[in-house]
Length: 170
Image (tube, rainbow, N blue to C red; front, side, top):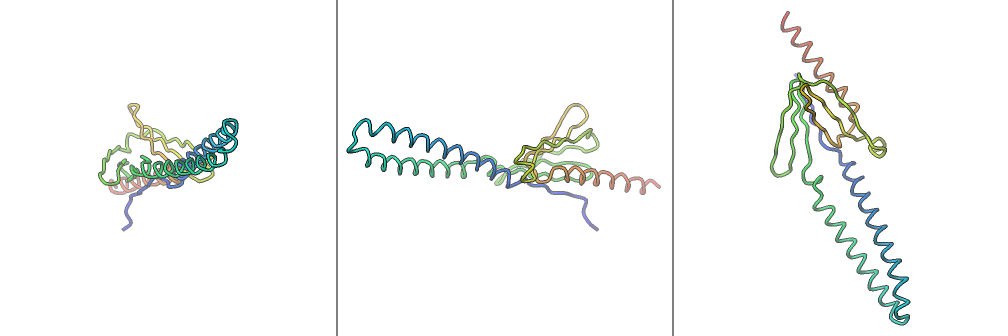
């Protein structure tokens, strides 16, 4: 008998897009710093300027690599990946790598679902799914793969449960 459960993990593509954007901004900043520095140093002393420019170039590259390493290692998204476990009755929002915190939401109080995607999210097929509940509460399922398909799968789980309940009543 197949289980009526979906396990959705955050998309790795979202992390790659965000860190790629950070790397791009870092490279632009470092190139601007190098260009400005290489224009200022020859005005100070033309003889020493070549050595200073080479030294500063390697210093800037080293700093860029250290910053890139820090972005990778200390990215909160990387270490605190979320996992969503969806059954016909509940959605569980679990977070953490070494320890886990889970919050459970009852699906019978669900009123609507919304998908929000950026242009890059559409291209790489990930986005945010907002599940709204009676009483004004909501659950943000951030950076999940194929959010439109997930809506269909959640609706299928709910309808299967309703059909099973009707069959049990008869």
